[in-house]
Length: 215
Image 1: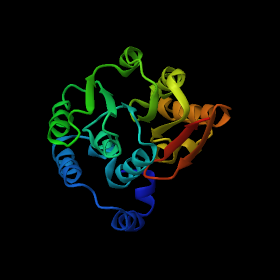
Image 2: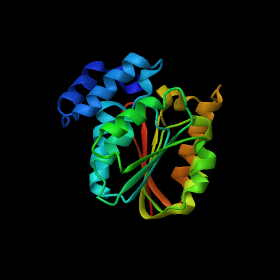
Image 3: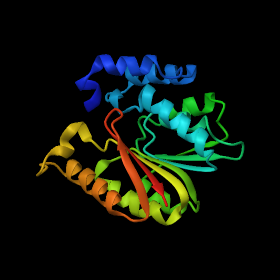
Image 4: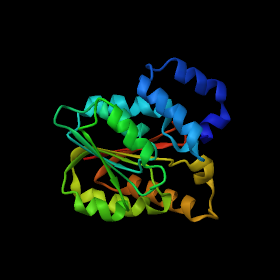
């Protein structure tokens, strides 16, 4: 559960009620995620999924990179806006949960447009020689800065990056963070905000979503 949801559950319900309808396959996936995983709150969820879908439709991306697949909800949401020759490369190292995204990708209308890569993203990204139109980062927080450094050379003007959990349950307000994850998230937010190659803002959606555009 995110910081925002904890602050106002009633508002969160209202936001879902007034958003576009969640596709049936995502509703089914969300239910299974809560039934079969130990940390179901890691799923992107209804509101974030609809935002990813809308952005994908706007961008109409040919090449999408997702770092951190979990059960596949975000990947399937972004797939909704792919052109016919578009493709998503989604990377995760969790072998135990890999069967869930694989199953839902195969069942979806986008089964030929999603490539699931099981491995360490820091190594797998180097093997992908693509110019990215849309990137979604939602993996180990301590590696956020390294991911950013790896992907930046493969961005074009207008490329969009989304980084999840950048408010980190409100811990980013701490002056002297006591844990490495909070420290790294604050550092990445600062570096992005000060980078002249980017324009950005943090959306207070769920646990904070950093929206970045390459100039």
